[in-house]
Structures are given as C-alpha cells and as structure tokens.
Amino acid sequence: MDKRNLIQLTGGLIMEDFVPRPQLSLLTSALSKQLDSLTADWLNTALVKIAASDDLQTASELQLQYSAMARRKLGSATISELSEGLHWQADQLGRILLISELLKLAKPVQVKDLINQVYKLADEYEKIAIIKGIDLLVESDLLVELALHTGRTNSISLFSAIALNNPYPALHYDDKAFNQLVLKALFMELDIVDVIGLKSRLNLKLSELCADLVKERLLAGRQPPTSIWLAINYSHLSAKAKLCYLEFTIDEDPNQRYYSLLGLLENGASDYTNEFWFKLEQWLAVESEGSVRQIIIALLKQRTTTQHAISKPKLVTCSFE
Image 1 (spheres, rainbow, N blue to C red):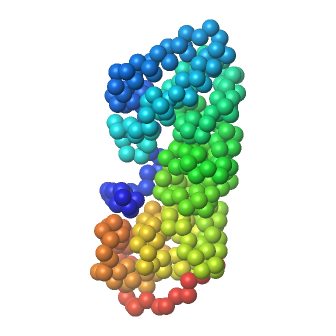
Image 2 (image 1 turned 45 degrees about the vertical axis):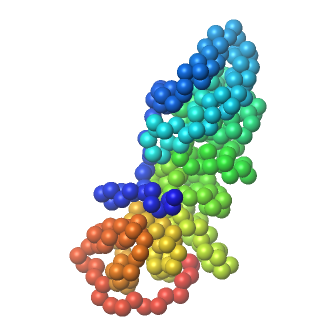
Image 3 (image 1 turned 180 degrees about the horizontal axis):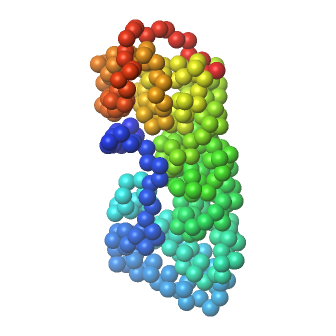
C-alpha cells in the first residue's frame, strides 16, 4: 500500500513529534495474547531459567542460547495488538524480554558492557531486536555509542532499526548525529516520515544539508528523495531556493507533490508568494490524488486573509542556491 494513503489528516497535525511507546509490560501483554500455550510455555521457561541462574555468566550463556532459538520458536509474525507505528515481531520482542531478564541480574555498572557483549555476539536478527528495543532496555543515553555504531552499518534492515520508528535518536542524539542519521536515511532511499521526532529536532543545519542534497540531485539531472521535504524548514531557505521548493508542490510525481506540500504544512512559514497560492488553487481543481488534495485543502485553510491569489504565476528556473 502507498505510504501516502496511510497518513490520516486530522485537525492539521500530520507528523507525530513522538509516537508514544508503551512500557515493556504492555508490549509483553500484547505478545502473550498472540502466543499459543506451547510457545508461551517455552518463553516462560527460558525467562525462569535465566532468572534462576547462579551467576551472570551462566545467565548470559542461557540468554544467548534461547535468543538463538527465538525466531524458530516464536515466529516472526507482527504483534497485532500494538497500535500503528509500533512495528514489533514476536521473536524481536521475545529477545528483548530475554535480555531484560538478564539485566535484572547485573549491577548498574555492568549494564552497558553486558548489552554491548550481547550485541557483539548476536546475529543480524538479534541486533535488530536489540536496537529496536534500546529505549526499553535503558532509559538514558547510556547506549548512545552503540546506537551510533549501528548507524554506520551498510545493512538497510539494521540501519532502519535505529533510524525508523525508534525514538532513541531524537531523545539522545545531539544535532550533528541526528542530522547525519536523517541524511543517511535519505541516501538509502528510506522514507523519513518514519523518523520519530523529526519535526521537533528539525534545525537550520539539517535544512541546509538537505537543500544542498536537493541542489546536487538537480544538477545531476536526478530527482531528490521524495520525503526530503520533511527535513527542510521553508523559512530556512534562500529566496531562490524557496521558489524552487514550491515548484515541487506541482511536480508530475505525486510523491514529490505529497511530501513537499506536507513539509510546508508541517514546517513551513507564512511568506508564501501570491503566485504559489494561485498555483495551488489551480492545482486543486485537477489534483487526482486524494491524499494530496487533503493537504492542499489544509494549506489553503492556513492562508491568511492578506494573502490572495491575485496574479498569474511567473515561470521559475528551479535552482537550490
């Protein structure tokens, strides 16, 4: 299904600053409702054995053993009880529960090294689970180095685990690290609408970096990543770049239209030109994409009474400078 059809326009706020993440107990409850009795018994037995270990070394070995079996035992089905935006598979959450049980046996000073050790010994499926649940394992910036290390991977699946649908970067990264994460997601052709906290972490430097990327793509005769507009604040752009930005709101690609308009609605300013409003009103009459029409209508509602479409738009040479 087209991602554009998954976003509901309700009251004008489209992008969530932070998607609420339930506590581990709520995730566990959702998982238990999905497991059959035999599978639930296996997981409970594993947790009990780890908890009953005589020492941390034995518990670590048991955690490693059971985690390696999690995908086969628990399956990889998505947990259906969770709300939209929480993309957890049964085996992933099972692995988080196993690690959480292990951490209960560790002293506070041992937690960081212990998680790093578990991560180092894990296969990619296990690494993805650890990174997806990093904010569930530790509620601080204790694991920022591990998160940043993961962000340097070439694996799209592993990188997505930290970059998308994960609040950890927005909560604990500095601006430089967060900006680099967003840029890499764009280079990997990922949809940054799933970068949690993007709207609240948007900054001048990120807008400039993304504007530079748009310019590079255009000079090379290529289209910019469709979701890049969500990482650009219109008010941060030069006058010439603003005009170029607005050209993408009537681009022949519906994805470019959708995301550039969404970016204006979420991160824009009030200084849109009369020519823009003229084009937008004209485009609404011919726009066939329902999701794009909704954003156009929402933008037009935001227009102040002093902004009127009073003249035919001028032709603009698109250049992000």
